[in-house]
Length: 362
Picture 1 (cartoon, rainbow, N blue to C red):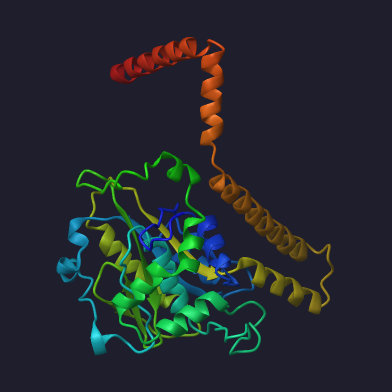
Picture 2: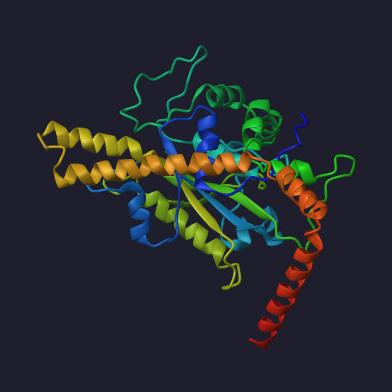
């Protein structure tokens, strides 16, 4: 891959891809999970995923939507999302970066959540953490790469932070490692890249995060600054309050689309499920519960399912990395050489024509 800061590929919106991406940065104790509904019960499962756990960490939301021209900052206030904050109006400690390179919005939205995570453990030079212990996996560990980047850019304005992200070899290389290898195979390096037109579907990632000042912010790299979308009560007994505020902001966005539009995706960056499953097992064992007890068996089966999920993510990511096009080209060459290609093409054309006729009749 080229070394230019502009060479960022598109990556798939998938929890396995994004979890593996942040782990490649050295981040620990978190994962991404998809949200299929915005009702209260679905939101509650984020902070109370299993019986006995009611305070699992939810660091932020990542929202993918089809970008529209009215999504620009010029009309942000007209959509009820407020005005982007700039300068001294930006709350102290809130990390926001403008997007300055194409195709970086997915990683930039993820970084927006990670850099604003509360109680995150930040590494010092040499690999040691500024805080000892990760509270049995409950605290997000930022890792050396992102800790160094956050420290380096902490006093940068949003545009320079965006430039720093775009020019970071470590971040760009990790991002591009999850692109499909056939993208490079199909592209012609001698020709300029095709730019999207008004007829193309263009998608964009943004983040929603809570802040210690009791407000929820929308972090969109295409805006001039963070957008305050509402307030929440910092109640220890109801840790999903801020998520409901973000939910309302997302629903307001959805109202600007046609009822038939379904091209959206919502994910949450949450505590690694394995941490509290192991914690629950230890708690049950501490009170004398036997391993064959139904409660223990249930937690163990949940933990096994999580490990299987991780294994499946690894397999899918390996398939994403593999370039199948040389195999396909060789297969076509072999079929042509054996004289079977013409017959297969004729059969495929006939099948396609019959399918079109059936569709026209229905």
